[in-house]
Image (cartoon, rainbow, N blue to C red; front, side):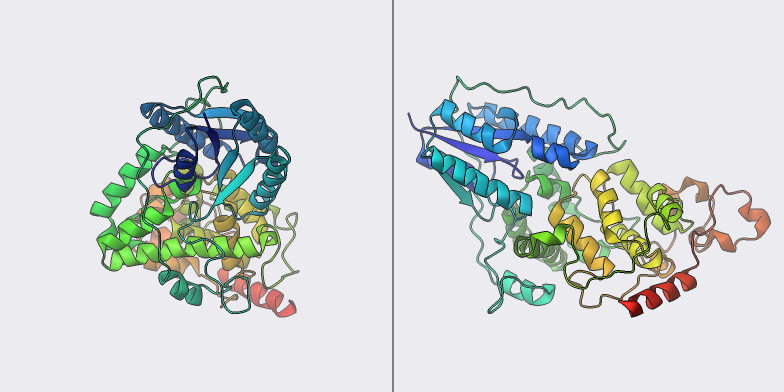
Amino acid sequence: MTVAVVLYTSDLRLHDHPPLRAALRSADAVVPLFVHDDALAATGFAAPNRRAFLADCLAQLDAGLRERGGRLVIRSGDVVDEVCRVATEADAVEVHLAAGVSGYATRREERLRRALEAGRRRLCVHDSVITAVAPGAVVPAAKDHFAVFTPYFRHWSRQHLRDPLAAPRKVPVPDHLHSADLPSTEDRSGVSAALAEGGEMVGRKRLTAWLRSGAAEYADRHDDLAGDATSRLSPHLHFGTLSPVELVQRARGQGGAGADAFVRQLAWRDFHHQVLAARPAASTADYRTRHDHWRSEDAAAEEIAAWRAGRTGYPVIDAAMRQLSHEGWMHNRGRLLTACFLTKTLYVDWRVGARHFLDLLVDGDVANNQLNWQWVAGTGTDTRPNRVLNPLLQAKRYDPDGAYVRRWVPELAGLAAPAVHQPWRLPADERAGYDYPEPVVQLDDALARFKRARGRD
């Protein structure tokens, strides 16, 4: 009997899974394997919210495999050592893996290839599993990636996508392989109170419901903070419980301005992956424009603490930060506003904010989190790096009646718009009734500081 191993990473699904399908074609049995990687745990990337969501994903993946006569094999340790150990135990000749784009993912792939080849085994790496279009499939002339989204999107839109693959009916798995227990889905220590449930079944239900009832209005309402007309599918894309290829195909099949706008957002995700694939150092280093005049964390310690706690005195900023803490997720418009406030109003290094987001975001990944932060901070791919989003004007536009603020900043629930967005303008006797801080900085002063600092760079 021939055996192949399928190493699951950020692709925790059965539907539209090219590595699994290829392994089933090439062998009589497969070993669906997930390794709790010691290296990732050591970096702190396995934050509580993502660990909890991952536990849901693994439980549903295992359940789906068992329905098909198989099971998920769980191991812990060094990922290369464990894959080679399982391949030896199963006498497998091939290991199948979805291509990643981070520096860590590419190093893992190279280590795996060398170790497997030393044992006369083959590593098969599959594109278009974690992204809709592979990072290297769309490149400009004489360059290795697009640095600006608009031309990338034009080329991306012309790419032919493969047809999504159905989930296999049978997944035969050797009986003799040992597996560690699935992680407990009951361990909620350090987890956000309203964290969403993970898993392929949950993701597919959410996708179907959203395409039916929310996609048509997406173009008009995706920035509406209180309405929250976003798909909320980003955690499922991060963990791969949904296929980006399938999402693009189903949205295009739906048609309309809303579906088109949603596909554009999926293209932004692929854009950031292709940037990181070409420039892996961008996970920690300025991608394009280097700025050396960020305020130090010590000098800005009080403002940073207020930003993290949702106590800056700017209600729309505080509402978004409290949503992040409570849900492990934040509305996209809120992400833009809070990131801009930290980097351009408080003039704090984008890496400080990116670390905090990765501590809490269930959908936090290197490509989208770091490169979106860089885009906002002016060190990344934004062609207008000095743009500054005024939180008051943004609140007026995207939370006009203050419903979003009142939902997340209950101290101000008794205020109507526009006062709810500028409580410091209330008469002193009225302000005394609200346990809410004064602004940590005046916007005019912050803008002047920003312009002076950028003038020195």
